[in-house]
Length: 197
Image (cartoon, rainbow, N blue to C red; front, side, top):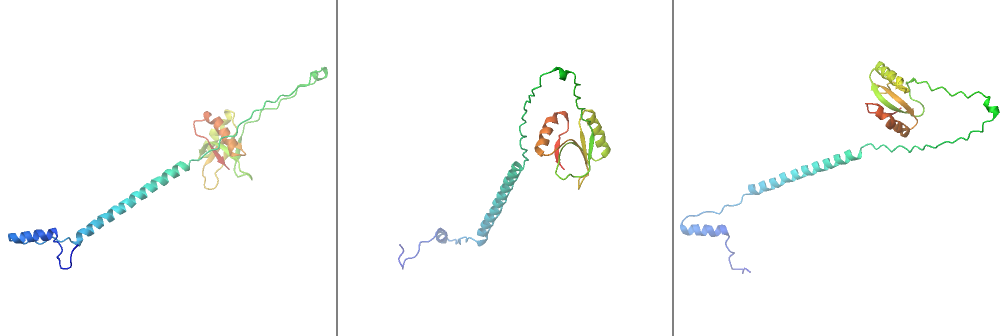
């Protein structure tokens, strides 16, 4: 405790000034200037904006990672194909039946090129094997596929699309088109894809 009449204790700078006074030299204490404290504050300010920038960069990278991992298109698995064995019981052969002519088997379906120039009332799904800027190139590729025994569909350009799309199948749903695409993908060098038109 300091009494009212007592003097406060001298600081380190005052002691060195007194000692220097006794030696004959007077040295004034060095005052702390406000400029030095401001530079410390400036440094703290510089560090804080750097921390904010680093935090923003981390948030951007996290958002990008989330976007990339959650925007992958998930194709539902195709429905299972159930093959049922159909057993027909044939009537016993009688003498009357022996004289009847054999039934005529239906002819094989003719393989053709169908030209699609407009949308139908309900959307259709096509398994596309190629996109061509020129109709002649699409027709040439179509002839090759017809020789291999495949029906082809040529979808004409529409809207902002300037390409002719050549497809090998037309389906009522995406799932059926995806099953067919997976089945025939091994026969093609190109990646096949499904077009909703």
